[in-house]
Image 1: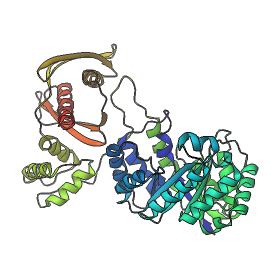
Image 2: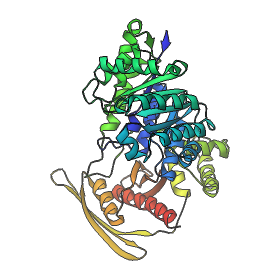
Image 3: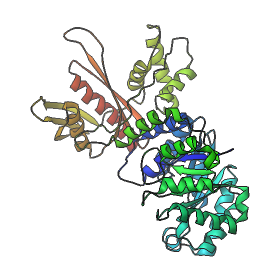
Image 4: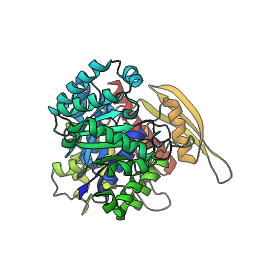
Length: 471
């Protein structure tokens, strides 16, 4: 019995809708969950801003162990070059050549007529094949394209070397019978499809995407684009369930681990629905921290740097040396060093910079019957700046006030509090991790006032970002 590949589009589709705004950390965690679930292909967003998006793709590539990681390219050589540079370290990379082929979309998006479009498809696929054998051609809006041109485009893609050809019902207006009739005509007019894998993608505008996808599988489709979270396309959980329970009827099965389906899709749903509140700087739906980092004084620098990389940091050679020296000072006094201690070592030793922003004073009003308010006064290059903000709590209010002063929101990747000393006058240490343009920066603050240590940690991380941006 043939196997149908399930390709998850949650990350790619989330980038096209304002309803789902995933952070860098959430995308990385989602890729790990999908890989564990056994989806055949994980689709990521393409490159728009080279520096930020390349780091995102590289990070996801290092996290995905079993699934194919697919990233779309535009119809030009520069896009292929940039995308492959970021994707090439993936264990199973795939480049996707996406072309809008309905008459209106072809001219609006690609600014090309039919002959030039066919040439661009062939040239781009050839450029992708020079990088990897796993190349997919996606005929976007295929059901609204001129039939004869669609057949030409698919033939061109196959002749150029595409191993997977996907046709999309982007309009989502077809019923299952109409979709199977569409596929029958496609097979009839493009016999070359027998030599490649046919993929299908259906929009859910009429709430018929799942039914159309199952109907497409019965007609021979070898790959189905779906999503673990509802983003107007085929439901990954529902299609996997149908294939698991109706193998004989569909004539196909999938490799999905359906026993873990509910738990993993629930986790993904929680991440997608945990949006950032306007009254809070916290915008991360991922609550897990690495639990398998245990280092000792006998570990070499390479092992420590591997653990630092696992935490999400990209350090320079100079900072790597400083962090390792700091690690040895701590490790010689303890049996082992875990992730919390390692975070503090990175925050204390990496990228120590002259402060652009300095804290002058802060006033916090908070209680169970009033809205938390923070008044923050700082200096920026010795010039006084201040702001007032409310929040869901004292830390929320303080961080939002700092954001107002800076005029930017940085992704708050993590926030950790731990006691340094004991007793009534105990010192509290806070680690704040901010992400800017995909790169992670950590700040450390110590105070007997835990709110004060949090503010100082945020400013410490902020100064590192500002220093790198200005230099």
